Length: 538
Image 1 (cartoon, one colour):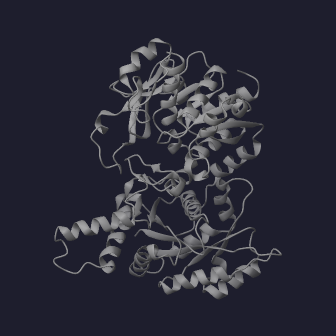
Image 2 (spheres, rainbow, N blue to C red):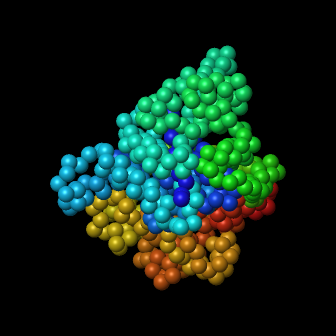
Image 3 (cartoon, rainbow, N blue to C red):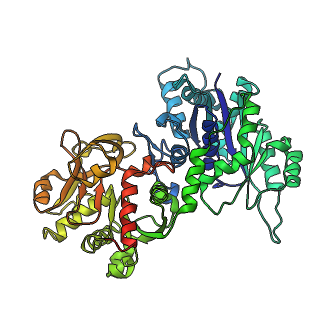
């Protein structure tokens, strides 16, 4: 029988449920178990695809083209769990499915209600992930939101039912709470007590508590929490503030024997934990020398989570290259307003322009591209960042002053970036872009071939616009290198600057596949080039 772990949160949001759930998954995998991860999001949107990055952070894309919550990115970076649209469950999806069944008459005229119909749909989606692979041992289900939120109630009720139906040991509850620090440095346990009480009112008695705190909780505090929450003293753990990296958290939890207690509560025989890859990664972290400054020229700089996977991929590449990557966040609108990019970009060793939508700040990105090209500074363009390279090349190398994307200027005479043909008549924007994993073919003697070491590459996409084939021949004739194409040659997937240390743009998003133990090849080579610039080796 599959085992299930339900991870919930209390007191407030942004405590790190996703990292805690991912770390637990990593520990169970280290003990030889096959783990699957599920995220239940209470929002009524069908998926995260149409949400503003300011509202919800980045959209993480799976191989099958699902636009999901950024926590699935944490699952991918910490665990080997295969991820698809089945691993992301939202209120919008659940209600849409139930209403469709009702319209089809599949409830035989019965009154459709939250219990049992909505909760049954939630349970069936969770159980479907468990049945997807016969080798699955444990399914970890993270329930988004905070206990007490009205939106989370159906998911918590579904969890309660499954815990009851599957029986003791087959399904357990792990609750993450906050231990705040007040004036004088005193830690307060009362919010945690109230949070567990709210869970008990939902009919769920947490089996384990993970307490988010500024420091490691002492034994007396843990015993106090256990006493007032009806949780065993040995099942109260601390997720304390780390001054290293979130990737140390699996090791911190292991030192507290969290994984050992989970196995015991699930009735799984304890086995050796192979954490060598995580320890080796931390050794790389501590061995880094020097600081490479990377200018991120983007549109959504105010919210760190808007480019979460990009920042993590840069960190991974820094580990592999043995340097600390310092992120210099630059709102592209500043480059439009201030004029001289030298004053803003002069101190960086590399420039990365990530993805985005809309016209705001585009001319600032074009300035950043031109400055990096002229000054031989390593440049990495991702999705929109590649399209910006096209606009820069058209305007500054071919003299087309109005060169632009059809997205930003429909009336331009030189739309070097144009709408994909299959997007022309699209009216609904949710889930209709070129999404998911697609194959690309790297060209001989290209930077992208050198990075991946193989001709055929599979990476994930999320875009409506593409390098216009109308200008491909003219741009290539003027010196721009085509680094990769789709296997049929119909679309350009990568462009590269000639006579430049490292200038490359890709239409896909390689950040989604980067791991702390295996950096993305393109991010690795970009940081290696920036490191050369830092060391004065052009």
